[in-house]
Image (cartoon, rainbow, N blue to C red; front, top):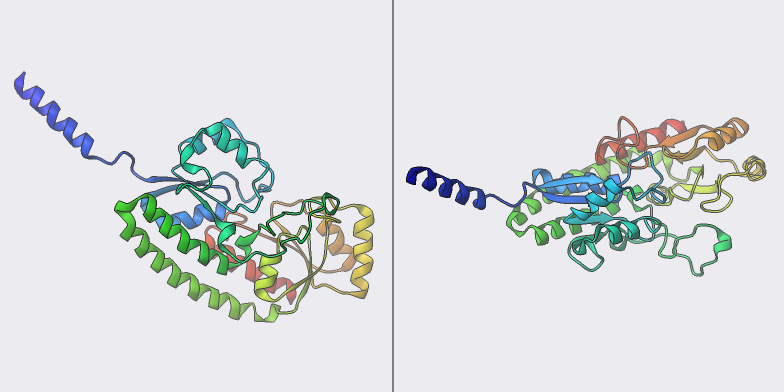
Length: 301
């Protein structure tokens, strides 16, 4: 009996010596940040995304299963800039998780780390769904991904200090590969400079700005307002005077309006993955930009 009791004590001590969890629980609001957390965190993190590439990140439902994942998160990584204003406050409130509140180490807002485009000088709801803090679709520029990666590595080290050297090592490796990839994409995309496009929603601005492309119109008459027949007809007439090479949309957006304009203006309709998981080639961050640049080049021929 004494031997059995001693064995139980030894087993109990061994269990207490194990970490409380195998990996840091990271919840991202968008797929690109979950992918980045995996790049930096490796097997020390368990990263998942609240949204998929085929969902509009402005609008999702705060389901009970998602609230449960938020409750268990040790780090929440979101774009911010009001992109998730319609659902993230509900998740936070319902989860009751104080670690991921703004201002705490467990919350990282990617949008506050990068130069922002289209910050309005005045707010008027008559102008549509305009974001007060600027255009939030920052993941379309890989240079922004680099800035967020550095901050994410520091934040992981702050929360999980025991693995700080591991996160720093993986960040250095990622940064070297990412910077080399950016140079490659910029060389490949050189013919796209100055190319005019029409976009479905104003969610391609960071991509166009990075590659030196320019938007001459949007399918939506105002941000967040569905394309109307009258607006599309006006846009088709405008393109006769001010041609565009292609009409762009994200994979999650309805393709009917861009297809209509494609047929009437005789320009290609191009669906871009927009984020990780948007199509078969965009399986990770590198695949996302490999595929995006190639699709643009194919359409510009």
